[in-house]
Length: 174
Image 1 (cartoon, rainbow, N blue to C red):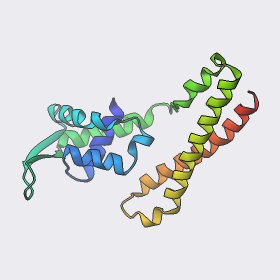
Image 2 (cartoon, rainbow, N blue to C red; image 1 turned 120 degrees about the horizontal axis):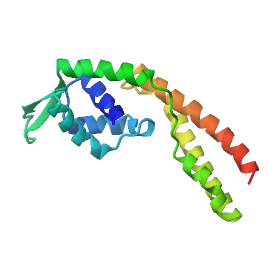
Image 3 (cartoon, rainbow, N blue to C red; image 1 turned 90 degrees about the vertical axis):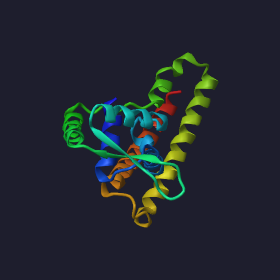
């Protein structure tokens, strides 16, 4: 998936890191919540990008830790990063929301199960909104977040607010 390539190349454009450190950044910055990227796929992707010539791995030994490979972008990798940025930006915007699969299939449930399902979705939406609210409120306390990461979190907050209002309307039809 090209989106995963872009995420990995973008992280390495900032600094050279091991595959494990890339995974830690994806986890700590909640990138997998915003973009479909699984933590286990990162290591495989790094190896693949190295084989394609986009990354260069250099073995490094730090203190008493075992040797690890630190990856950095090659010239070809920087060009691929820019190509992906422009290519993905020019594609139509698709909003793939997993909850749509549930909504599309509500008619296949009994009325009681429909209400249960909608209540579960509502609780998950409220939980996500609470998390995003906390992050937005404390963003000045998180100096490690970039301006673009803050912008994406704000976008996610606005989306979850919209989904919350939409779900209220959907619940009225069931």
